[in-house]
Image (spheres, rainbow, N blue to C red):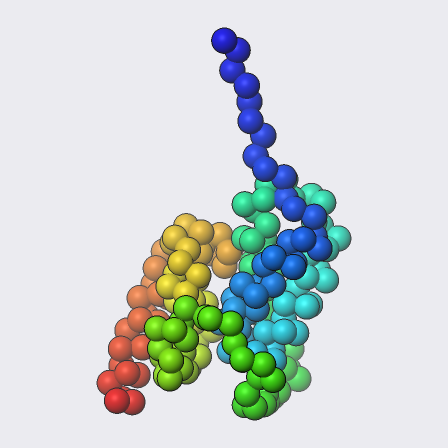
Length: 170
């Protein structure tokens, strides 16, 4: 019997992808940027950058990694701009109640998430990818565009910092 080569599933059309994955992308951007307002801007700017290259994606599995990497790189680019460093975001609550966020279900007070937001951006990103998004070390490295060793060290440092912070804020 002849073997049949199976092509990997094609990336979905852009509008369908954005509609289905927007909540997850916003969670990722919030983990990277640290606040929901910047996360909205970050996702929007990143999707604008991704759209012209969308047709070049050959696999559906590559779409999330590609968009997350774009979000991360866009955030790093923002941090290099002097006017962004002095930007202050509002601490007002969102207009609508959050979805049944697994982190909020496990920590209804939001205390742990507040501590995660205090981590440096690289550690926050590694911790969020590994434990919040439940990616493997290799997947997180692909999203961040770094080595697996960098992901491991940033995750380890982030977890150690969270342990210290939880002991400081009983």
